[in-house]
Image (cartoon, rainbow, N blue to C red; front, side, top):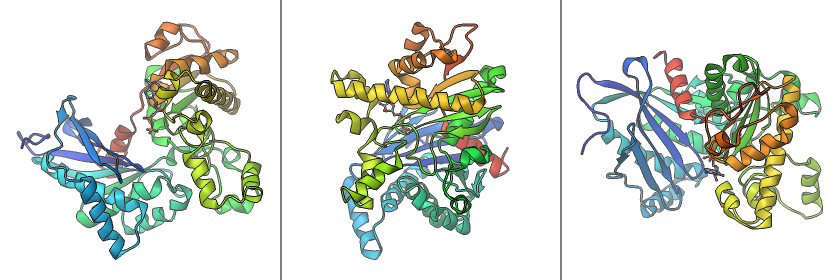
Amino acid sequence: MIAAVSAAGAERSVILVVNAGSSSLKFQVFDLAGGELQCVIRGLIEGIGTRPQIRAWRGDGSELTADGFTLSQASSVAMLGHITQIGQLAQRDTQAVAFNALWDWLVTRLQGARLIGVGHRVVHGGSLHSRPVRIDAPVLAQLEGLAALAPLHQPHNLAPIRSLLTLRPDLPQVACFDTAFHRTQPIEAELFALPMHFYDEGVRRYGFHGLSYEYVGRRIAELAPQAGAGRVIVAHLGNGASMCALLGGRSIATTMGFTALDGLPMGTRSGNLDPGVLLHLMRERGMSLDQIETLLYHQSGLLGLSGLSADMRVLQASGEPSARLAIDHFTYRVAREAGSLAAALGGLDALVFTAGIGEHSAPVRAAVCDRLRWLGVEIEAQANSESRLRLSPEGAAVSTWVIPTDEERMIAEHTCTTLGLS
Ligand code: ADP
């Protein structure tokens, strides 16, 4: 078998980046050659817990075979059965099984390279972590304590960390947080108007997608230094969606809050909701906590509104009025949040779209920008339909951009910095 990282010449140093979600696990291997981070393998395992499959590519884009990846549905279920017998079956166990299979597969491909560190995306760092942190057992325990604040993400994020602490206790691991970038928010942006002791106990607006905002903020500073040093709104519109106000490259406000449920409607999440609705559902409908959690995380957003799909591509292709309504509500909410963030910034110099919908959906961008004309946003139709980097004409009051995000590269950079490798 040909290793993906060649053994030619001196042994090469690589780092692994792991982004473990609820049903998928994305990974990338970066070579540190010449002080530059170069992606040499990237891939993902999809269908975790149902029909796990790996897909991976070399840095040049050619596909790697799945040979040696042995995580069939049967073995996944068999292992889970084993875990159930010896302990409580938790969501994270499916991720651990998938990660262990990935590890076996990767070890073969990394022959001839020295793995010197692993960086993990961890959604919640709480109020303690304003930067990435090297992981040891006490840090892991502390992060596990935050699982209740991000029940859909945190247990999955932490499962590979725990696996590696057992498999390779010598291997340095770094946690990179989605919340850390927003620790620059002023207190008035972090507050909920509850009795103050709740804030002191950690009930506050943390914000998420911070790794994406950090990367995009840096790119806009390179592409448009004046705007990058000024007032920028970044719209991270993916399956999970949020927006961030950046002043001089620092987060001063964001739409997600205490959890990743707040703000914009998403694929299946409700986003911002009158808290009175929850009281109503509990009191008048007798809904349990679990039922409400399922409703807000899995049955709402674009899926709930359309009754069709959480996938923007499906909605755009559908002729159903409910699909149209879901998209209209989405663009309306994005524009309203942009107005709110512009108020926090005291104006607007640049607007940036990123993530799956932001990078690829010309109709969504057009509708949002149309709603924001009053703010000085104007775009060229041709540039938008071609998803060009810059959408606005020369001289527009607000420059508008499409910048592909790269959270994995950000994690790789943080991992190197935290481990003193760069
Ligand atoms: P996440 O990382 O949060 O899972 P992504 O950033 O990959 O999500 O974004 C997924 C979303 O992007 C889905 O709603 C998908 O439909 C949408 N998307 C991807 N490509 C397109 C496209 N060409 N047009 C419209 N929407 C798209």
